[in-house]
Image (cartoon, rainbow, N blue to C red; front, side, top):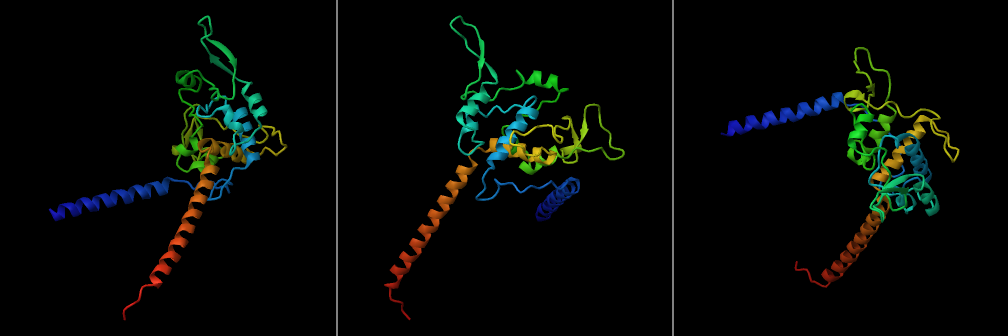
Length: 260
């Protein structure tokens, strides 16, 4: 019986080792960025968030939804921090279906701050039919949903290139060295100058990718800065309590005579 369990254990070890080796051989090192929101004291770059929203609106929003975001989030603290008037103006550019009215009919109206981001498609079937059968994923929490997070999304956006010799692609499929399987149905979305930034920043492909990934990182974790502040306060409180307890115990034990 012991030999049986030893054999099973060895087989499991070999399977895990081989899987890790295969993954290491097939993986590509992701592009790295010095993200301002990383680390214990990380914060979002407000200018980058606003530019990232512009990239999302002008490039990504025609295919990808952000169903977990409301227009009011754009003016909330910790986010892009547009003014309330700016956020209202942004929302008013979109129409939502509301109702029924007093006649029992649905009607269109301009979006309000309380409305969710308007989806480019009415339903999943329409989205698939418009994209060759592929469903464009919702981008609200995309950074959290992909292994590698912000670095992975950033790498995919900049990872388009001609396929290596002998690598076959079907029609409507593109080569991307950072995409799982190296095949992606989305055409290269970014290129130099595709967006004219309202703040005058040069819209290089790398800058566009960095800004939109910053925006997507915020949308996936809009309360990140508040969480960092709470964590810092909690740790500071624990340190103070620990010091207080240490000196209290030291004072108490100083009264106890030690028997030698």
